[in-house]
Image 1 (spheres, one colour):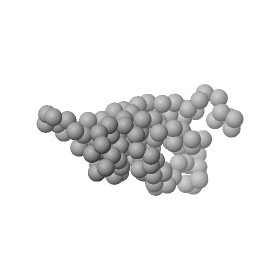
Image 2: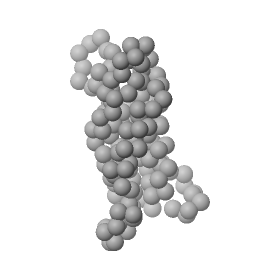
Image 3: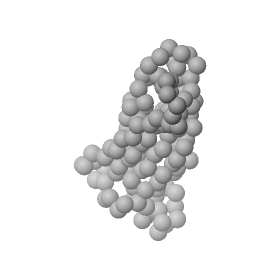
Image 4: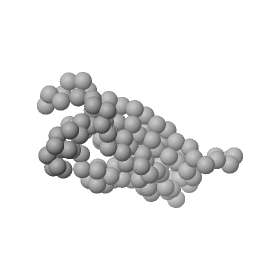
Length: 129
């Protein structure tokens, strides 16, 4: 159920080797990841039980591992990878992922470059959520 509730992780800093250019793959760089997970938090609030929600510490570690793994050319691909991971949690009904690449090889001065995606869980899951 979509209640408007969410869990947000902002500015997860992950060192990884994504990029189109060889030097990006060789040297690596920092990526900043923002994730907002749509999740119904009523049961967790009522029970005060972490098992009734998505444990954001564990989620952060899983996101970092996913970003570090398997270098790809595009941060769009990284964003999709993170979204798929988050939506693998049965409690997650949607996710917004932003991948920032603050050290992107751009010839003009800039503060940040980022891509953002919004994804929703399948409308019918085997567990009925």
